[in-house]
Length: 454
Image (cartoon, rainbow, N blue to C red; front, side, top):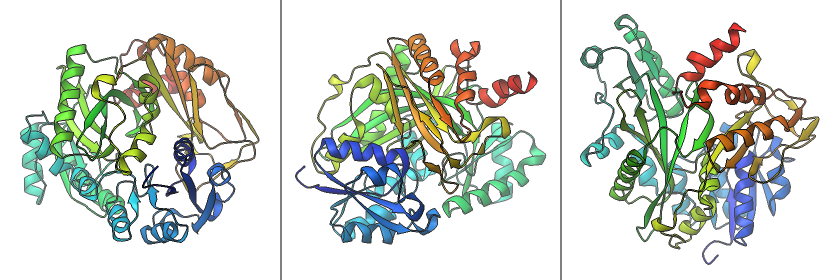
């Protein structure tokens, strides 16, 4: 590719492998930036070369902007891909890249900074007439907090202004809990993001989490690739995603996708990103939630139903090329599911399960995709997120996709560490899930109590 010939991958695990595969198909060399404990990882084995960036702890390796940029310069890489997590949504990385003439494969720093500020993003959506969840501005004093919560009515949701991933988020069900949970949310947000600002939103109990996949290039072409349903969550962490969302009518789908396009065009967004919404199932209304300015963990379900390679498009956009397709080219073909297979123990409060994989036999077949860095002999490290694999299936309809996923999960053998495979099997066999009668609290409020009662 004209302006990108070598990419340093500032990440690890399955997303690092995913980027390596995309670069190979584009005839781009790859450099895997690895911590000391990742020297024998699959990305390290598959990349054209590796460079060690420090000790195991992320704060001393994968989260070091200066070290990663120096690694890119030292290996002759002309671009950095951050994947997701770690530094993917830190504006300091693209800013430092720009200072040293390195291409950042992702959005501009201003997009990351602005859309990462949830209050700024809310105001922008409101200015375009996009519905937002009723909420306060930034809370400065305790008196403002109580007044805002009372005005909205309990329960309310405290949210970190610079947050994400459920950090700095607390449901307040009673006025007497408000102050305590406010201080907890602010402290958690300050620890996670270096920003303790908090605001209040109305809490929607019967909600689905729906996100629209966006792509924008430097020529100001912006398209959506329809939606994903990410409602199956535990403690605000997604466990199973699907596309398209079974709860959306054709009219609602068009309306929500048009709203996402409107917002992305307003900010002149570049690269891959998702615009996220809350769907109030009781009132059949949707509200803007936030924008994630990166490739998402669950991007494969969109690729499975559209046939569009999002990571390759990201790289092409960063190299200055226009999108390789138009909105009219984007079609939905069937239904897809993604199960996040984590190395953790569902039977033991979902505690991480590090250790050596002594047997690894993944499923394969038509309409089955596995994105993973696991293999027999691989040592699951305790220093990082427990995500071990993403298993994706496609079917002509939702029922077929579910059957295919059940077949794939039953044939997936992993020994040596505990995994979430049995828990995913419980989800898929549940009649309420199969009938689509779920919301963002369904796992915690319905499924887990059912399992514990057995």
